Image (cartoon, rainbow, N blue to C red; front, side, top):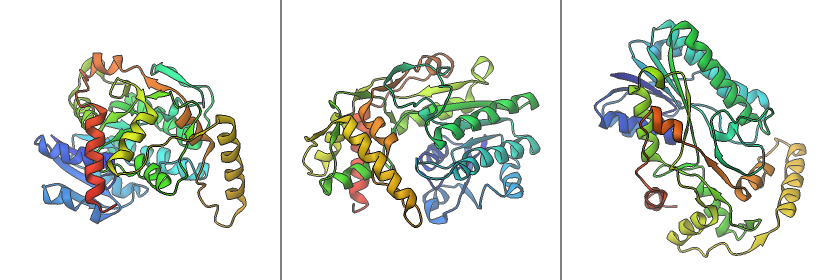
Length: 329
């Protein structure tokens, strides 16, 4: 099978492209940074550089491939609606049109459980439990991109979407690096009572889910799937586990949720009026994420994708820590 992986210069796209090569698939990769995909080129991947906003480039990327794994997109919680609309909806629409124009058989779309988040605690969320309104542009545009993907079924494209929660492992630059840096500066505090449990996804488990999505047939198609390790863990236990690997003291000081939320609100207000609208060091959404229970029901993935997460979060965390140390961080 020949596949295209978008966003291959990033964490998830890069890790899956490497895994796909190891499974014997023929892999074409796209990304904006050639230096980010050299390890894939050395392993036999075909690299096509360019911006997915270029519709002609996307058609070229989709030529002669059987399936596309779309991992590229705008991430984060800070930025304009237009930024996230283009990065998540606009690029996905281009990918869909490229697939249809080049008669690609299947599109596997990487979405996000941020579509569920409304600032409250949730345990065992099912795929249909999407809120009526979204609290940020990222979640709103990821959900809208999903809808575009599923609409493409009408034109014969086989589609699957995955919502993996808190993915980590070697290559992760989004979750723990910021927390490590904050603790080194003495600015990290447990928000609330520190007992909240959350889902994580080991990157190796997500690789298995993505590969299963490429191979699935029949009733598995046309669905969105929650992906996680299926075993919620206390968030602050995880954070302190990582900190210990870097000889940093555990987080012990607490900050009341209301105080943290008020500080984040003020931080955002100040940054909005500063020249260049710099990204705040503390967000209201981030405060809620760090203080609330949040876990997913993965029974649909177990049933239709034969998803059986085998790699525990602690193994993925050790992998991340070893990798981060090698980076000289």
